[in-house]
Length: 404
Ligand SMILES: Cc1ncc(COP(=O)(O)O)c(C=O)c1O
Image (cartoon, rainbow, N blue to C red; front, side, top):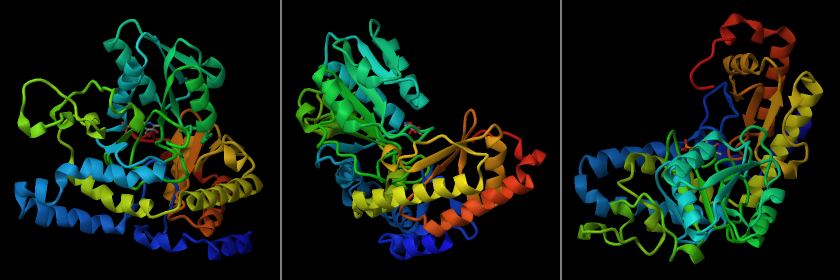
C-alpha cells in the first residue's frame, strides 16, 4: 500500500501546492472542511494591510487600496471556481446572513407560493435561518423532506439544499434537483460550504438561481472569513433582499433619502465589510482560482478512496458512514463508532486532526491542495494503533470541549 501511495504522490500534479501552506511538523490535517490550513502568503497580505494600508494610508485606503471594491473583486475571483460569471457573486457577511438574504430573494421571485422546502439533514443554520424568515413573514411554511426530488411540487416557492451533507459527505445532484425545481416553477438555493473549492459546481451550467457558501473551509480564507452569495444574472434586475443597508444602495455616498438598490450584485451588500478578514482571505482565493476544479476533484476522490480502503482493511470496527462510490461523495469521509468523540480526541493527541459530529461520527475532510496519499497511509497507521492499544479509553479524551 505504501508503494501505491508513493506512486500516486509522485504522479500528483498538485503536489507542489503543499508548500504554499503552513503545515506544522507532526500534524496530518483532516479539518480543511471546517477551517482550511493557512496559506503562507496570507501573512504578507495581512502585514501589508496593517503596516501600509491602515497604519500609513489610513482612510485613503478605501479608494487607494481598493477596499471598497473588495466584495465584488473577490466575488469575480471566486465566480469561475463555482461556475458563475463575473458580476454574479459578491463576497460579504456570513453564510447564515447570506442565507437569510437568499431566502427572501427567492421568495420574492415566486410571490403567491407559500412553501420553503429543505432537507431535515441540512446544516442546522440553514433551517434556523428558514425559521427566522418564517417569523418575519407569517403565512409561509417550512417543509422538510427526505427525498427532495419527490417532494417538490407547485406549492414550493424555494428549495434550499446543501450540496454536500456535512455529516455523511453525501453529494447532492445539482443538475437533477435544480431541473426538477424549475419544472415545478420553484427557485433553488444551493449551500456550497462543503463543495466550493474541491469540485466543479457548475452554477450557470445548471441554471441555479441563488447560492451561498463560506470561505473558511476549502477556500482557506481564515477563521470567520467572509462568505459569499451568488445570484444568476437573469434574476438581478428584479431580485430584492431584505437587509437594505447603504452598501447595497445604488449610490452609497449620495446619502440620499430612501433606499434604491444597486442594479447589480452589490445589491446583496448591507453594510461595511471586515477588511482585515477580507485581506486575509485573498491569498487562499488566489490559490484556488488558479486551479482546475476537475483536477482537484480527481485528487480528492483518489485521497478519499484510499482512506476508505485502508480504514476498512485495518480498522474494521469503524463503520463507513459516507457513500462508497466516489462520485456520490464530497471531499469528506465519515465513520461511525459509539466512542467517536474519544477516538477523535486521541487522534488529535497523536497529530491526526479530524473532528467529531453528533451523535457518533468521526469526520475527516480532504483538501487536495495540501494532503498527500502518504499522509493517508500515516494517518491510518496511527488510527490503527489507537484502536489496537485502546489509547482513546483514557479519561482525558472523554472531556467535551465547546467546539468539537
Ligand atoms: C452547510 C453549511 N452551511 C452553513 C455553515 C455555517 O454558516 P456560518 O458561516 O454563518 O457560520 C456551515 C458551517 O460549517 C455549513 O457546513
